[in-house]
Image (tube, rainbow, N blue to C red; front, side, top):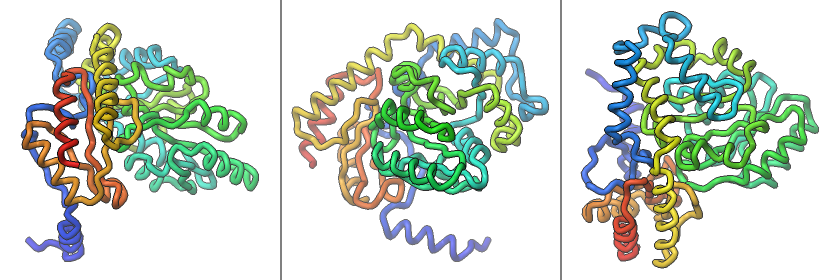
Length: 375
């Protein structure tokens, strides 16, 4: 079968840049790469409790059978969405099939023609994709720079009466750092037509129910996007917001409307994961490991991007160079992944370490001491 020449040339170009992606298998036994921060994805207890919950509630069904607006809105959706709204101090929650679907659905439908989207320059690809599907105009502001953000807000509020949506992440996936959410919120609260949107994908579970709740900013946020495939170790996502926002998304978010719903098993896993989060000691163990990682990287004088989250990145420029560093660590038994351009900007390639409750302090010290011999 013939393959389009233009597509083939793009593959060749990626190969030449040493940035061609391939599906691989986990080879190293010590995990410093997955998003399973609390170990819930591996939890047999969570698995068994989910199964028992479904049996006890006579919900032995494999699939949702259709979209939520047709046949797929089974009773567990109502149960879990009410649970999420209560736990996250939100009027409502609306579950999507993934964080990507949630961001695509929100940003493609909420900002209207003539509106403005201001986004952090390092915002996640799913948000960028959603913005591109929108009819609104979009402009980036410098990473975590409140001054640049305020200047852009003032620029656009003076020139028109459009709605302005400011989007950032509470924990950035490729740096692990966080913006000054309090300062940003204070700036945004000065303007009636400016709305604050937060992606909490990498904060949920790492900072309990997320940084917004930790900072008690819930009432200042127009929409929060939370995902369950990282700290909670399962699948799906939700958008937290007002009743009007939920009603709007049900009617206009195409990634919600035109897709088969999640299975009862997926919803039950989310429910049980939240119950486990309430009393598990995994969060405490994770925080101890984060502090140990920071202490050891400082002791060894390693140059990591400043972070208090579960994500820690060491900049090693060049795709070939960073892949070589990752391979050496993998050969020592540590599953550490290189992050290549174009996922990150050229010369900002990095080794990305994801910490977990189940990592031992000895493993953390060993991987950093190995890294110190390479860089």
